[in-house]
Length: 302
Image (cartoon, rainbow, N blue to C red):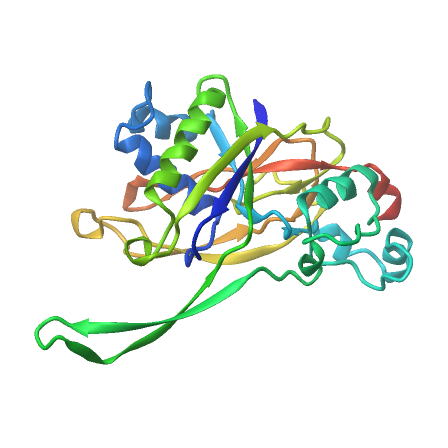
């Protein structure tokens, strides 16, 4: 499989988080609508069921706020101090994509460049917006009682995500999916101004050769063969299947997923799997994530 970096530009704030499972689900609907030549949704899903995924995607991050691998927050204080540049007391929560790659390659935090837009990422911050909306009563033409609400969105300068693509899909197939996604828009509120996004590029990510350690770049489901030697980071994720009225089974699931930045002793290029639930065998929840090699320097540090 080849590794690519996808770049997107938000043209308006978005309300829905860019989790890999949500992103994959939207791409599936594009395929189900017949907008990816040569693919049927049944064939696409079957590839994931048999463990031969044509596409492994990660979360989309602001390009100046990629989560630092968990290992750097788990090392003893004296070890962490050896990895930080002079004058820096604690490792940052996020880095720019370029700084993140340098960290994974060298095993050390480099001094940030001056006069860059990346500085706010040191506190994990991205541009946040708040908009007040009024729900109108169509019968009276007036504001509905209790219909005032505030919606919080985010609009970074750029979003990026890593994608592993096999030959069956290829670069052209990946670009087709992403362009269709941009035409459609992203997540909640698309009909009233949120989630407008522009396609920028798909470029070779120049993934380094695998090492003993690797960090995840998206949400993923736990697997039995996941190495116990690692630095875990996880959260509970609610899952709400679509078209509930036409299907049987539970209406909502709650699953545990690894978060981006979890770090393990593995040379795998992807971690996780897609899962289904009892009573909902027709529903598949994506839970894979690409990994990125982490410098062997860490082995001596851990």
